[in-house]
Image (cartoon, rainbow, N blue to C red; front, side, top):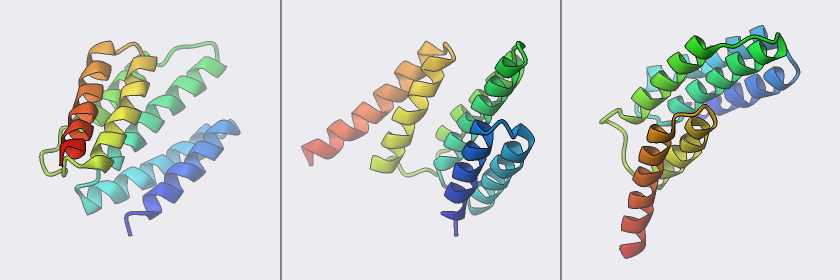
Length: 129
């Protein structure tokens, strides 16, 4: 059941908040593997955003930066949202909006705007039905 990935993501986020970065990474990987195996779930992008946050938090705690890791996971998240097999529905719009905020946090304002525009277009189309 792909919903198990939500449990893995939530558990990993709790571990990240507690500073157990290795444990968090392990559960984010489990979530990503499950979502990739099942296919067609835009929540994979959220998992990758969470992994970017993990590397950001760990580096920040050490007084370092993790720009390469963060950028790599943001790219994976963006690629996941561009998967043509994903149904462009309300769930997809919600995930785009959530991910847009994260892209903005990391300074990628072009992708933030694009993802917000995708979400708004879906919401507009649904309102017109």
